[in-house]
Amino acid sequence: MDNSDNKDLPVNNNANGKPDNGMAEFDSPTPFFPKPQKGNFNVAFLLICLAVAITALAYFGLYETGYIRVLRRLDNGAIFSGYWKMGEPFGEGILITANGELIEGVWENGKLNKGVVVAKKFTYMGGLKNYLPDGYGSCHYKSGVRYHGFWKNGVKSGLGKLQTPKGEVAFGNWKNGELPPVKGQAYKTGEKVYGMDVSNHQKKIDWEKLVLYADSTGTVTGNLKASPYVQPIMFAFIKSTEGADWVAHTFKYNFEEARRCGIPRGAYHFLRLSDIDGQIKNFIDHTVLEPGDLPPVLDMELDNREMAKYADLACEYAHKWLDAMEKHYGVKPILYTYDSYYNSYLKGKGFDDYDFFIARYNPETMPRVPHLEIWQFTEKGNSGGIETKVDLNIFMGDYKDFEKFVAEKGIR
Image (tube, rainbow, N blue to C red):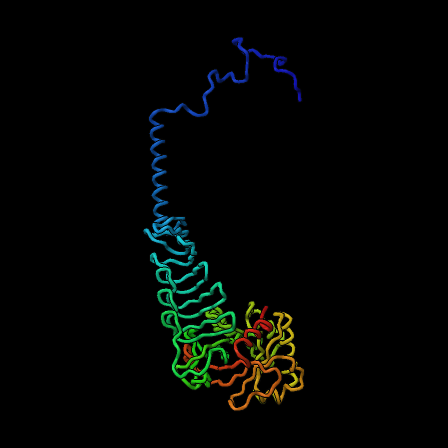
């Protein structure tokens, strides 16, 4: 590349004696953009204005029909972030009130019928009316108190359960935020801890209305269909899988509803004499256990004739499943069986270190097994919220003992 000055370059003259600058055909070069004319300028200006107006109208239309997310300060000082439709909140949104409460949910026709309220002293999730708890909902107070039940105009009203950090439980039909005493009641809720186990047989369960009917001492037999003396469902085991390929279609719904309604939950697998590796995979693939959940349960109640013939194989499969669950979930599973099964087939077969969940329907005699934690005392119980008969259980201890059991042996 030559860096010499242009003055040293030779100059070529054309036929007229003028220097040839390489553009001899263009004595007056034409600009790339033509000189604007007044008429053209006016047209362009009008087109720009029209485009702006159309864009503004389109934005306004999308804004008013709920397709654009907005940030808007309301007349009462609250700030709304979400969608707006015809002058009202619409769809998913967040409202920060003038006193600092955060309310989140899905607005319909300008109203929020359910959502989450985060305030200075509590967090609430459930039904709302005029941004106050209404209908069914759960409230966790900063003090550690928890309430799951019905509300009206911001106060507890209807069936509900309240639990304190000290292990106290209050359950029943609340009125104006208070739980009135029931005449003749000779027990405190929490002295006995009742639960249930459910499967597809119970069909659709209304978890918000679960209630057990007791006598005046708080004892539930399962026979009563109505009583002024009531006990709450304090835990639930839900059938997840059976064998290597069967999955309960009600499991996901029931498992989620139990958590929403503040009921400690667990999942169980029904053992079959089939591919045990497939059974292990079936349960793990379809059962996600979270912190606070109860340990997984192996339901070992094969037909008596089958057990009599294949007891050793059944015990081998049971041990493989239990070992795999402990490795996967990090907690020791619970073994469910009949009192008679344990004594006939499982005793002395290496299961005595496990906690037992035993079915025995004779109320006069407790099951005779080591480490008895849960007793299924009836398979024909009655409960509010369930149209069919249901298995009812009792934990071997009071509510404080139960909380300790969940904390020490549940999913961590």
